[in-house]
Amino acid sequence: MTPERVAFVVDEDHPGTSEAVWAGSDRLGGLAELDLPEVARVLVVAPHPDDEILGAGGLLQVLHGRGVAIEVCAVTDGEQGGPGVGDLAAVRAREAHRALEALGLPAPGCAVRTRLRIPDGGVSEAAGRLDAALAERLAPDTLCVAPWAEDRHPDHEASGRAAARAAAGAGSPLLAYPVWAWHWADPAGDDLPWDAARRLPLTRRQVARKRLAIAAHRSQLAARRPGDLPVLPPPVLAHFRRGFEVYLT
Image 1 (cartoon, one colour):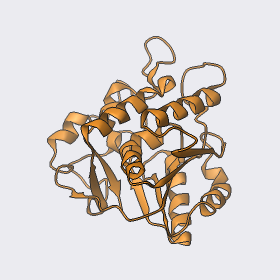
Image 2 (cartoon, helix red, strand yellow):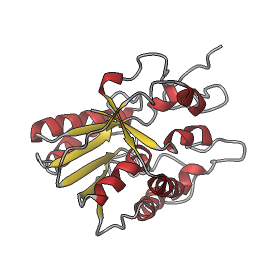
Image 3 (cartoon, helix red, strand yellow):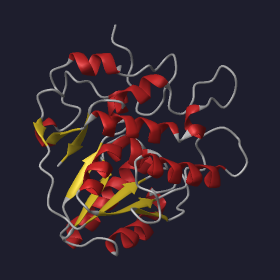
């Protein structure tokens, strides 16, 4: 019997699609390689702290190596996700800075991280504010990298839609990264737009740095209470330890 696939619920009843299933499929191995545009800047839209690392931690390293200026737009502070550790927004902001350092992108300097402080879980209600913030940061020479607008997480989808609108208005190239789709999608089906999917190979060093950056988000790797799963349990993290990343063009 096929396990039920639920968008961003991870527990014993909703194990999702395992990385072993993805690895055993010919979907990912058969993807064409991503052809990156020549740009001066990249704006990475992160609905929550850690999404920029999970979805684009390898790409950030590749672009940094090309001398591209990097800005991470942190839409929310992720204050609703994780164990009760006091000011979780501040904790997650510190974790995000450490994650950029782990990628070799100390901020400020190699990368700028801008916090919009839109309420976690409320991105849809702040669509106008997000549209304006992204529009003022995009131009034809700026690559916009954002969550896939059909990722089945409300904040991811709202961020992805806003990025698509702003990129179209500014004439910016756009790449979308799936996050929760790896949990709920079926590689044997058409849950993802495979014709638009491209593969970005990563070196061993880039994979190692990305893993260190993921590990910097300690609040997301710890269970809230004994017996609970963390926000990002090992089966979910396995999708982001691959030797490549996938983008939708």
